[in-house]
Amino acid sequence: MHKFVVDNNDLTKILRKNKSVLQFLAIFGACYLVLTILYHFYLSVASSTNYYPDFITHLVAEQSQQTISSFGYHAKILPHLQEASMRLFVNEKYLVRIVEGCNAVSVLILFSSFVLAFHGSLKKTILFLLGGSVLIYSLNIFRIALLAIGIYNYPNYQELLHGTVFPVIIYGAVFLLWIFWVRIVSKKTPHA
Image: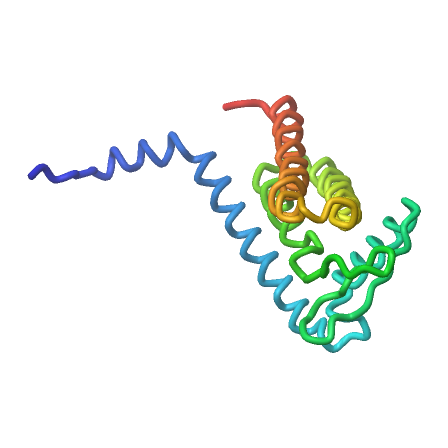
């Protein structure tokens, strides 16, 4: 049996050659971990606020309700009595529940971690983070509203809409923003 042996010189060469990739992965992982811990801390203290189940999820539910109403439907939200979520009704029909996972914070953490790991100038990074976050948050509100309207009008397609179509939209938008960001940073950053 042949042993795989790497001497220190080979390891150093490999690390030097892949320094930028390793640096990206380290920053991405650290940002993702820190932001996730901060979000879980927020969730642990959010239960003591006046907003159910937490402020962000409640706000997303309210804005989704308003968006559905702007499309000419009667929308209403009510707290769920058995679980930490908001029930969303369209034309008096209970269609979906908005849980903490629907508020797009986890998607924003993923988006932000990538942008911070593949950072440009401080000003551009902050502006892109803010603009991208607003876009993702807004798309999420429209996603929930259109999902509820879609389920109301086409109940047989609920699984397809919720499980495939709308996740592709939100994650596709994040992916396109990442590509756009990499192109912006790559054009302005001199390569070694």
